[in-house]
Picture (cartoon, protein in one colour):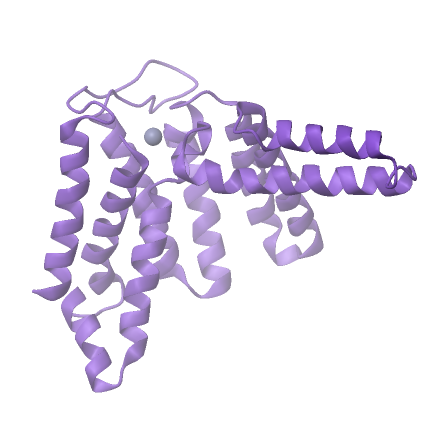
Amino acid sequence: MLGRTHMAIGALGAVLVLPVLLHDSTAHSMVESVGHGHINQATQLIEGVVVGALGGIVPDLDQKDGLMTRKVERIGQLAMLGSLIILLITMHLWSSPIALGIAICMFFSFVHHAEWVRKTSLILLAVGSVYFGMRFPDYAEIGICSAIWFGVTAFSKHRTFTHSLLGFAIAGFTLVQLGKLQHLVWLSDVAILGYGLHMVADAVAGGIPLFWPFGKRQGIRMVLTGSKADHLIGIFSVLLMLFDVVK
Ligand SMILES: [Zn+2]
C-alpha cells in the first residue's frame, strides 16, 4: 500500500485506542477538553495521531521509495557533506577550484535518491544507536535493539525483515523500553499499533513473510499498491478518524 494510506490507517488506529490508553471517554471529549482549559488531553491526541501515523510508515524503511526513507536519507546526505568539508579542510584543498568541483560533483551524486543512500543512512543510525547505548547505560538495551533493527533493515529486501514477527518484536521491545524510560508508554503503544496495522494492511496487499527468514509470505492480494482501493482505504481512514473526533 501507499505510504500515505499506511499513515492514515496508523492515525485512525491511534484515535480509536487513545481514549482507552489514556482512560478518557472518547477522542471527541479529548478535543472538547480544550474548551474547559484542559489543553493536555488535546495535545496528547495530536501527539498520538502523529506517532501512530509515523509508526505506520516505519516498516517501509526497507525500501528506497518509502515516505520515511526519504526523510532518513537526509542523515546520509549530511554525513557525506560533513565528510567532504572535513576532507577539503584537512587536505588544504579548500581554495582549489578543481577539488571543490570534484567535491560538489560527489555531493550531488550522493544527494541523488538511491538505494545506497538508504543503506548508508540506516547504518549510520545503527552506529549512532550503539554509541547512544554505550554513552547512556540506561539506554543500553534500546541502543543494541535499535542498532540490530536498523542494521538488518539496511541490508534486507523490501517486505522481509521489517514486515516479519521478528522485526516487529525487536521494534516493539525497543519502543516499550523507550516508553518506560520516558514515562510515555501510551505513546509507545500507539507507535507499535501503527507498525502492527502496517503489517495487517500489507497482509491484504500481497502478503507478508511473518516467519522470515523462514517460509514464504502469508496473506492475500485484495489491494494493489496505488490502486483505487488503496486510495479509497486512505480516504476512508481519514474520514473515519475525523468522524470519531467530531462526533
Ligand atoms: Zn510495507
